[in-house]
Every structure is written in C-alpha cells, then in structure tokens.
Amino acid sequence: MQIVLPTKIKSFVEREVASGRYADEQQVIVEALRRLADDEPDTRMTVAEAVANSLAQMERGEVIPYTEDFMREASARAHENARNGHKVSDDVKY
Image 1: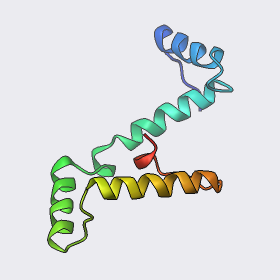
Image 2: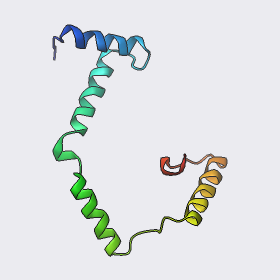
Image 3: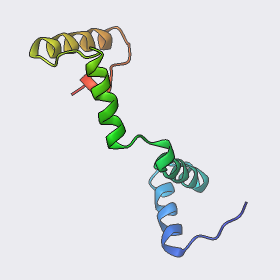
C-alpha cells in the first residue's frame, strides 16, 4: 500500500522519527492508526456503560471500601512488590 500524505502530516511524521520516539515512518503511522481504532465507538465503553457496570458491581458487593487503611495496605504491598522486582500497578504508584 502506498499513500501520499499532506505536507503538514508528512512533516509531523518526520519530526516524530527525528525525535527518536519511533524508528521509522511506518511505526508512526501504525501507532496513529492503532490509536484511531481504539477510539472507535464500537470498541470503547461509554461513560453510561461504565457507570452501569460499577453500580451493578456495588449491588453484588464486589467493592472494597476506599479507606486510609486500605490505601496504606495497598501502598505497603506495592512497595514490597517493587522490592521483589514485581510489576507495580499504576493505580498505586503515585
């Protein structure tokens, strides 16, 4: 497949490669298309769906109260995991 990009887009792609973030132009285009596909309405959950799912989980008792004790325990587990070389969830890193 061959495509012709508008000058402004071509310059953007070249700047991304020059910055070192991508090895070549193809990587820039593939990443841009992947992000576009991820934003398709058919592949993402709407806010209303997310809220409905959360409410259903609450009704089923599938929740953990968000307390200071819970956060201290989560932080301690994250520190222990980090010390042991395990991946630390982004939810508790900061």
